[in-house]
Image 1 (cartoon, helix red, strand yellow):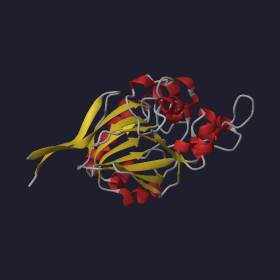
Image 2 (cartoon, rainbow, N blue to C red):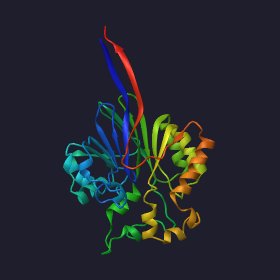
Image 3 (cartoon, rainbow, N blue to C red):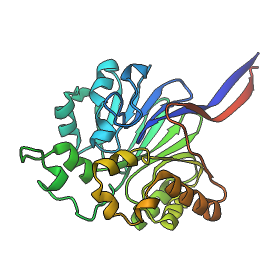
Image 4 (cartoon, helix red, strand yellow):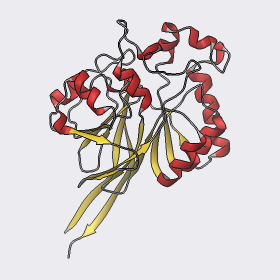
Length: 289
């Protein structure tokens, strides 16, 4: 008797840094859910049909604001979040801590259908810095905003290894020499979803891509720029580029051009929001004797 097996995984970019992945065995994995409350490309949480694993890179609102609604719909979902940020996350969103995995960089979690590796990251930096009880880390009443503080203090990247051997890297934050060297231990991947920013040096970004060594790079986090710049025009004044170049067309074009020159084996794929894509589709035959 001949049996057919399908490998590969489905992926859609929800918005900002939010992704949904359907693993080869059918389980669903969410990354940084920002759903109904999103300022850009909102999507009702009801459109998520299943959630078995939820990975939070950090707990800023544009990465974690829908975690309460998602857990309410899927109370058995395993939620991965940084060790320091776990307590404030549970308090802010009234989460059931019994489903929380307090994660530190370098830890590995293995299940029957997926292996999840946590990698220490760095949040992007600003010229004004980020200090305790200062700036955006302070609420209107003067008290600490724990989501902002812990979100900047603790950030994780992840590598997902699926049951069929497919691998996907979730990377965000600051492009640094340290990150380039750290990610060398997590190279040779099928897909990498990667945060892009005007703050990044395009050559250093391509060095990071070489370390991760994916077949496909999917950029994210650039769809929030128009809203951010409209709300905070001072960001344009302090930007490393002239205002007319602070847009996704220029930044993505610059990154694409650099990757084509320096990483010719990697395809730079700009996904559409909330559209499903399939990666690594294959059919294998198994002859039963």
